[in-house]
Length: 237
Image (cartoon, rainbow, N blue to C red; front, side, top):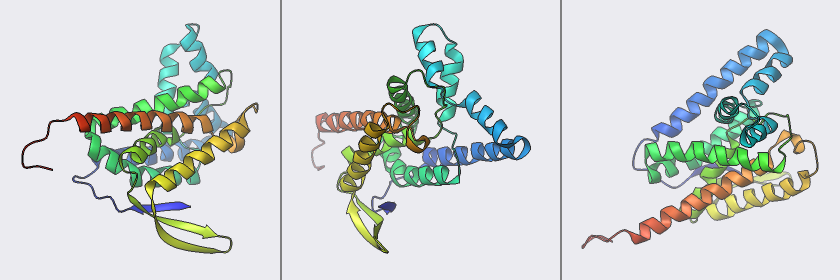
């Protein structure tokens, strides 16, 4: 199932979401330049320098490593991507689901939420494989946090989805709770299957997705609880 768009309008232009998408494309252009001029070895070094390297983060948390380098890597990694498919897939999900979360939280709170989700996602992967030297790259963890918040705040939102049935495909509207729950279950299955391996299958940090999604769902629950406690204005629903 591939989501294409949601039927969940926003009240204002999602400038933060658009800015994040633009930033990811700009950083990817830098990656392409690095690879063009220096080849795959240069790109690997670029990822190692700017990605979130689990053993580097672990050492920083233990007080034996460079905290500044570790923090920079965790933040910068949110804008890095391993290829066109990785980038375009992430940006599609960010656009579909991020604009509504930005609209619900507000622009600045959403930006803080997005980075906090990315950090939580990276720490979840570090907790699973703290000695790994393979850099984590991609906005997937931060976007997973957005998905977690969306499933809590808009479970009934209709998502236009491309569904493949063996050799055929169909466009249907599916409730967000089904699409996102299905996605999360896949991450759990692949995450468990990847345990014990040096890296996750296909280079995907599944536990970053799981951690980001869980963190976003918690924030979504807190937002819903806060909404229920707000005093009602007479005459308003």
